[in-house]
Image (tube, rainbow, N blue to C red; front, side, top):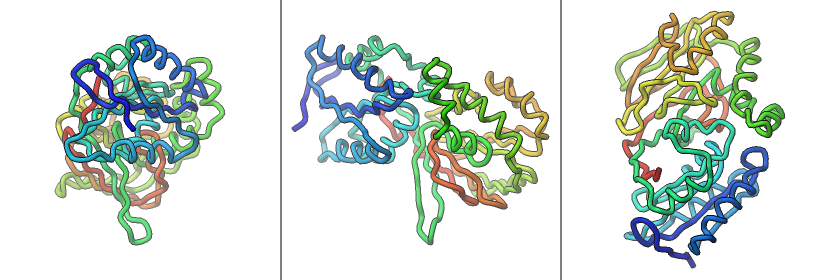
Length: 322
């Protein structure tokens, strides 16, 4: 049975999905801070903890599988990857308000939406109703074994270098160590510099909205983005708008390896567009083909190595509470 509570703009079931392993195992302690606010205000709630990969997706699917006319308020505590997993399972988007307590190492979504990390004031805003922000939802599709596969993303979907960095970071002991020091975003910078020594370029063909074709002879990466930041604060698409129904695309092609470490600091401020080989585009549908399979990432999660993907966007699909 769902608990209902009065707060902010009305009565909604208040449901939490918590990743206790977020932020190198500090997720549970951060949840206890959030729980204390609920208890102080005598607000009923239900909380569900993930234990292994796939749990968040299944929990979100079950908790948002509601009858017509019913609404849910689902709050996710974790990193960008945890929220991405929740999106994969969500049902009935129009009937679900989605809140977020960022506790990951990169927190790129929170950075772009200016969501704070201090638990108590963040909980107060959520419990008082917050502000509903209609947000675009991205989708990447590909073919595997003759079947069409798909995965949603909130922040970005990239192929090539950025995805290779994410793939290594997922199991990196460096990430855990830096998280404990509060320097988690340096994980991506360190691994990124290391990857520059080994990553192979590939050829690529990119089609925008079924018309314009971009030919890349030495593609480093291409990232379709709904939000401005990825990889722990790199502002690859400084003009991205999460409500315009379009994807901003950053393509890095034919840039010498020695030059990329020079560009990186400029990318932190969104000033990298002035370098030759760094190009920006905008489209509602992006098709990418590469000469060899490359790592693909969605909000830092890795579907696998692919050589053909299609990115689309559903305009203002999410009822996101800030």
